[in-house]
Image (tube, rainbow, N blue to C red; front, side, top):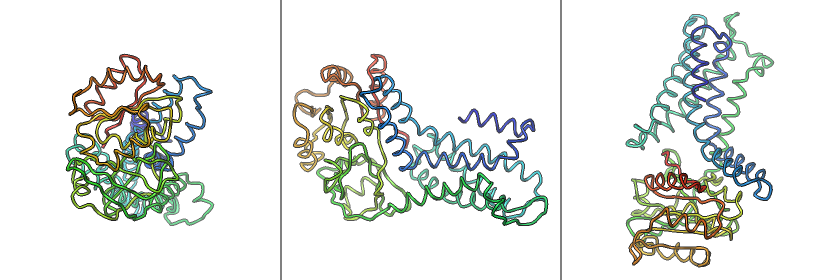
Length: 408
C-alpha cells in the first residue's frame, strides 16, 4: 500500500501525473479516513462479524477459514500504511499549494503546514525504535497531536473547498461543496470519532490484588467471547486494552487480568481505584474468530488468560491450557474459581511451572494436545519471545496457530 502511494506521489511530484496533483487533498483525507477507520471498534467488529457470518465452518474448507483469519487479524498494517501514505500526499499537496502560494488564503496554507507537521510527528513517533522505549510519549503524541492534526485537516479541507482560485473569493455554493469527495471523507471521519467517544462511561470496579505481579479487575456487564475492554483513569490522556473474561453477555460482570508491567498497571495494583472510564462498545480480539472453527485449542501463559478464557467458558468445543508460576497465589481465588467452575477438567489443563512437573516443552505440549483434541486451529497468547518461537515452530510443523500481536 505504501509502495503504491509512494510511486504515485513521486510521479505526481515529477509532473508526469497531473491528476494526482489536482486531487492530492482527496488522497490525503482518504488515507486518513482508512487509517482511522481500520482502528475503529465499530469498523473492526463489523468486518469480523461479516467474516464470521460468511465463512461458516460447515460450508468452507479449513484452509480458507485460516486464510480469512490471517488476513483480518493482520489488517492493522493498513493503519500504519495509510498513515504513511497520507504523509506522502500531504507533501504533494503542500508542494502544489506553495508553488502558487499567492493564489491561496493564509488560513489554508497555515492549516496545511500544521497538518503536515502533525501527521509527520504522529508517523515518526509510531516507529518501533521510538514507540517501544518511549511508549508514554507515543501515546501522548498519537492522541493530542493526532487530534490537532484532525482539526487542522478540517480547516484546510474546508478552506480549500470553499476558496475559488479563479475568482479569488470564497464560494459557499452548496451544490459545489457536495461534489467534493474530501468533504464526505471528513464527515465520515467525524462520525467515526464521535461514535467512539459517546460510548465512554465511568463505571464502578473492584480490584483484586492477590500479589504484586497481577491484578484482577471486576467490571460491570457481561460480554460475549472474543471481546476486549478499554479502560482509562482519566478518559483523555491514554487508554489501555485488556482481554476480558466473562460467562456470557447476560452475566452481571466481566473480569480483566492485568499483569503489573508499567505505571498504569502498577497503579491498579497498589491504589485499587473504585471508578474507571471504559468504552461500552467493546473491540474484537483474536479469540472472536473461534466461531469460525468446529474445535480448537487455546494456550496461554500468565495474564494471557484474560484474552482467551471466555472462549473456553462459552464454547464447549474449545480446550484450555494455562501455564504459569504460582497461578493460585498470583491471580487469587476470584478468577481461579471462575475458571475451574466454568470449564470442566476434561477441557482444561492448568500447569503450574513451580510444581513438580516444572516448565513444559511448550511446542510439544501444544502439538500433542492439538492432535489429541482434534483441534482445527490453536490460539497462543504468550510473551513476545515465546510467541515468536511457538509460531515459527508450529509453522514448520504445519500446525495452524495464531498468536498475539505485540504492536504497542
